[in-house]
Image (cartoon, rainbow, N blue to C red; front, side, top):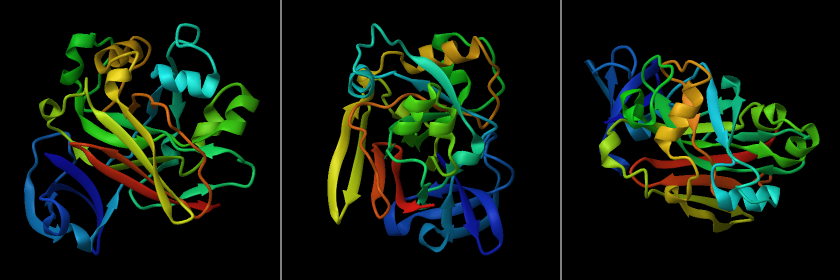
Length: 265
């Protein structure tokens, strides 16, 4: 099942998205995606509404350096010398599908990072790796936009990754955890620059250093996760700079596509 959050003529609401393409339909639900959906009877064509970020989390917890090829690409070191690490992105960085990534003047080298994201479904602490599906409501896509110049200048990553609009999220939450093989999941990023589209990231979740269960265990050993919290599982190699006028699209089969234009703030 795919849960979305949409802007309609009547205001913001959660819905279940059914079908694909021109036939996709948004069926309004009461409440939030964390219970079995109760339909109100209202529905809209997806083409007639605007998709928003599917969730506004209390926090975004991210795993850095979780793909060996990305570690080598960005840090010029092996994963043995730079193991995975935790960092946070503020919820104010979240924007939805189609919303602009706005680059401020002081950020001079801004890159996309296409990632699989987990949406937490219940309060949890000290979760064992094998029990990760018990606390995850579904999958979505996140673009962990990062200002590399600030990242390396500051020494810690809060400013570089926390700028407003630097966390595009969507298009929805896919809750069928067993329908997606997360041990062998393609992840692609397509960048359009000067009218030419190139596939920059073309990798697979099988390159992760820590798998999804290990990520959840690692995080919840330190902090409590709440419903709606977003877990970024790491970026593979292929990240590249974006500039105003570009368009970046992240694609993960079984979940969907997340596309955003790039503008000057």
